Figure 1 (cartoon, rainbow, N blue to C red):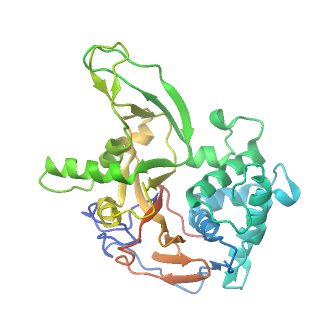
Figure 2 (figure 1 turned 30 degrees about the vertical axis):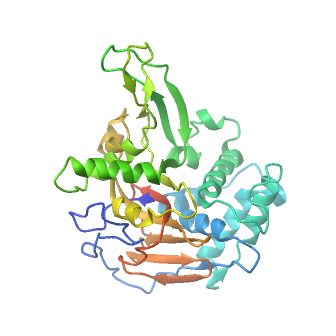
Length: 359
């Protein structure tokens, strides 16, 4: 999911997915003052046998994230890999998004660059279906490679590195025993996508609602935190207590991406999951602790969702220029009401804290 400045009426709870089907309603969404300067959204081709829906969904997310699109446009130099250069291929398709008069654009150049780049790992190969969330992550990491290769992925602090400055969550995990005070060694790491089990999400939702009279807007972040704490572990000093791992956020990312992991291809939790999703997310609720004041004050609002249904990916995204939710299914693009898609399973959600309107 993507979260950004609130376009929705206050009081929306986690009863659905805004834009991808939910109870957020349409009050509070502003209409544009003029439609004449707004370029229509474009679809991406996916011919029979190409199986490029996973890439097309990732591309639509990157293009419609105002923070990413604007920042990427400012980059002019990079480490070019010629015909396997993901940076060049992404620049090309973004130029077509902005200037082409065609309603449907080919994503072949980027698909080819991905296949060549990851040939040794046999990922994202031509004609073979792959995972949209992992495609999204790997595109971000390749952008890091092209523009900030002098620094390692896990410690990159380059100010021009969009993936690490805008998307990366700098975290450490640690067990702390409230009984004896013992703590495990902190485990630092960086993630672009925060993955959560749908089974754990639904189980935690039931537990939380059992102890409260009704759902509240602030429950969503707490629900995600509880669902991602993992299994119980023994106290580091073996005092007998059972502990859960706590995650501490060390920075304040501008975009948060949540990946929902399904236990099977035929899960019966789809409707339950949709009813747990909220449109507002506070970083202070999502993690056990956040160290930056900016992060403690951050509220993020849902602006996009990649869905997986029937072995096919599609995307819902809130287009800020027209203040409307749009649905992208490869070449097919249409405006949707906020209650559409209630039976669609969410695969990935994106959050964005900034508001932007122009290309």
